[in-house]
Length: 249
Image 1 (tube, rainbow, N blue to C red):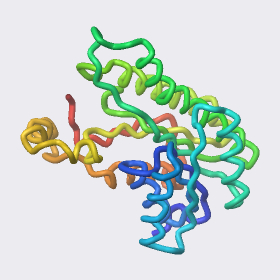
Image 2 (image 1 turned 120 degrees about the horizontal axis):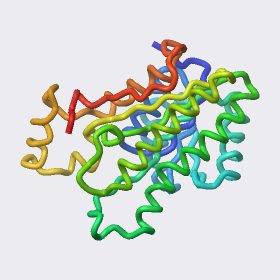
Image 3 (image 1 turned 120 degrees about the vertical axis):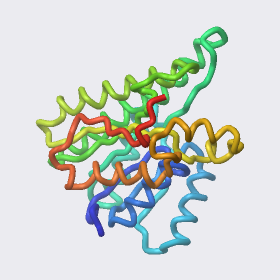
């Protein structure tokens, strides 16, 4: 199937894990994709992997500072000039945190909020300006199950994802009149590099708390991003779609 044929997407945090799975699935479904990362070497590595799988993929790599409004505006304009349109903005870049409140440095709290919230605002604003001019588009943000249930340490991370949910719901109401849909995906425990590196004894109690009996795969989460980006979700906006195996921890 080519659910995104003729569409152009930008995916931040697209060099590995869930972001890379989103990029690959979008390409497989006919989209042209701008893959964004924080370092040129990781972007180049991801591009090489994709091109090795399919040399015909329409994909480029960029390293904009997603916390800089001017850089993001220029990056989006580059994507539009390259592929002819700008239809889908996936705000996936982010950082987690596990610091105890008693040892949490205010500057570390601020860094998490800047990358996980401020950057989402900047990218959404830049994308919406272009989408409004062309008659519509889709913005999808990466949230987390901890935005709903919290977590026992690293308070900045769930706080930032609560904020992402608020941005998502509010922007959906504001931008609907411009034919721009805004949704978020809230993954549960997913087999990213960090989770894959955990020993078996650490994985077992995690799996025990998931009714489906397994951790999620990046492709499970990417499928939700595909649905929300496609016309199948043309009347879906303002939603926070949980992809967590019904985990409630």
